[in-house]
Image (cartoon, rainbow, N blue to C red; front, top):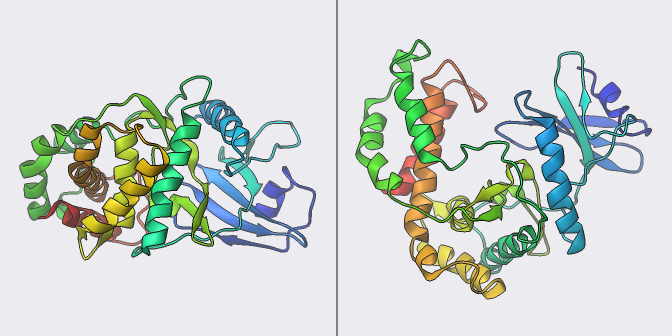
Length: 313
């Protein structure tokens, strides 16, 4: 891989530096610096359908432009497409770097409120897209799908038996039916991965959302719950006071977008999202087939255990 050659398919500027950027679990990103500009060059997973990504980008970029809401604005290649495919079959894209700050929990009350406002604004914007996007990951937030994948692992040849953790498996079996019963309407266009790491701040306000490849029809309440899960958890549990501030920011900005039933289910929905992530991480940790990156041995198991703390076990 020659990152300069790849960038040359998008821009004419000489590359000063190219360094790994962010901690994405799926795509690989590089911060590109030239004499006068900064860009993100990103390799997307081969299994991601670039035609679907391009179609969805056209939908949400038009909607965001109409409201002057920032997002990663892809740069076209010399061939007038959005992706360059290298000799190994990897797909690459570029977009201008958006100056902003990615925050980590714990957040101030102002930042929590801004999170809720920012997501509500995005949902209102996505509500104006001309047609429903096609999900790149149709199984996202489909707990039944992840349960089936987990259970099938024990019947096939991909199981890494020595990585099993019987305590985690007991927690999974005890709670799976509980969270399968948590149902939210999937009738809106949502971000799909609205965690804190995908939000950019400036001066305490949300200025952009990134990693919007997951845009899909889904549940606004689950999008909000995912944000709360990532922004309001510390020492394992969910800080309900912080969660209430995010919810207030959301409801104040978009009153009526969520029903009273959806709002009442938010605490349990947060736990459901945490359980779903734990199940996905644990399944990967005991499987030869990885969907997430294994940054070091035991990384995925650690991630699973951290998410399980959210459900109160």
